[in-house]
Image 1 (cartoon, rainbow, N blue to C red):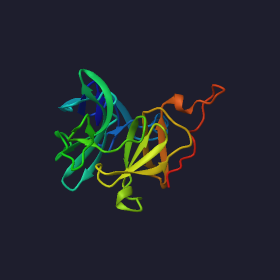
Image 2 (tube, rainbow, N blue to C red):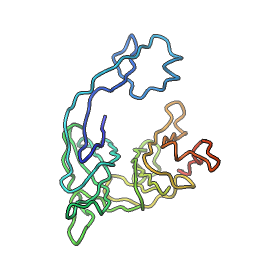
Image 3 (cartoon, rainbow, N blue to C red):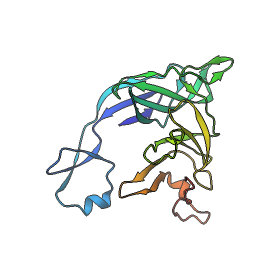
Image 4 (cartoon, rainbow, N blue to C red):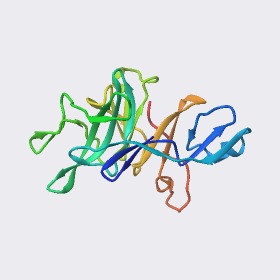
Length: 221
């Protein structure tokens, strides 16, 4: 479990609330209350999170980092949002990348073509700017039509960027018809893998009359 907090990424094991079956030791994070109520042989209990490591970006404030992690041939890669620190101010928004061999201990990535800020490259900043904030990068490798479409970065302004490795990004289209304020999460429905599920802030689902409804139809191919 990875959380973005203040200027650090905290890596935790366990969960504040977990569900556990009588025959399995697997913890299910954020298990839906409806499924808990309708399942047999299931108990809930309060657990304790244990701090495994702290990752600090060397040049950026990451209080709204929205980190996303995917596997690579050499381990794991994480991309997160950060504000480049210049003169004590957070005034340049960046997509920052870190690498890890074990998923716990992380180092800033050394990208081949990093973003340049004020004439100087930021070694772990990806060259991508879709406008606004992004809050999720989804690993869609199983359903991608080409390697370059494996990773999908969803921006709050409803556009999508795609990448094969988290370094080189390309415009991919739009994921919904209206802008939505981050945070956002996206995953494939495990019961119907042709279906994509989006979660977002309640305000993003609010209609002009004050009622709430489903998010706009997804436009991801």
